[in-house]
Image (cartoon, rainbow, N blue to C red; front, side, top):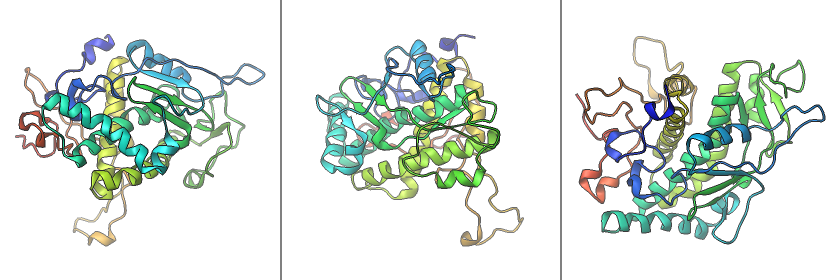
Length: 343
């Protein structure tokens, strides 16, 4: 089955499968980051024996073969000439507002009326997290490697849809050629990886530990990003993490379809964000007594439902958050929106 047969060219928001040009602002966002990138790798790291010791470049290159408009370059972060370094994004409110203003201008052009400031900020958050999360999830999905990245390791250029990433340390399985030795990191160590970690591979015991490492790496990366966006989006942490969960899931789901592996992407995303142990008693426990889901701080559950059929507009994923784009145009509401009642 070809990639195109599982995921057609991005269409209107109503289909509920949000790709780079769909989602909160629809396909008119063709020049925003997250619109699609042409993947190009600048540098790769090899050992003296020729073992590939970076996580990501090969995965980004493979994505570029099926999504030629998406440009990811392995290079140091850039600034100036339209580039916004991730370090500036989380440290300088003025830089963040400039990024959001890009989506506000596009919203005005698309809907013919200004977006509410918080709605424009929410769309800006989605369009930043969607491609940034792929820097983590795609190597995990294709290579079983998890890059350990901080916001300071990336830069974005919204006008042209470019992104740079500086590869460094990564997690891998014990049988990975780059694994440092027979003794893998204990799972408990994943929650205490020093920041920034020194470069190189770090083996974890098994697939479950690698998934834990992926969630931890994503959470570490996204925490300062969500903190920076929060005053602009004007929503609490729980809603922000729901928005982040949607962007992470939809990005890899979309990419998996392009790569001809949509069903595997759905299966692995469902497992990645499974609620886990949340109280086995038949009697409801007080909220304070319930253990946190294993995927915290992400919203539990990837949200997949039975696939749509019969040409209906029913989504086969229910989002964890609402982008509020209907405030600009009522008919623009996604069918995957949690506000939409479905029988």
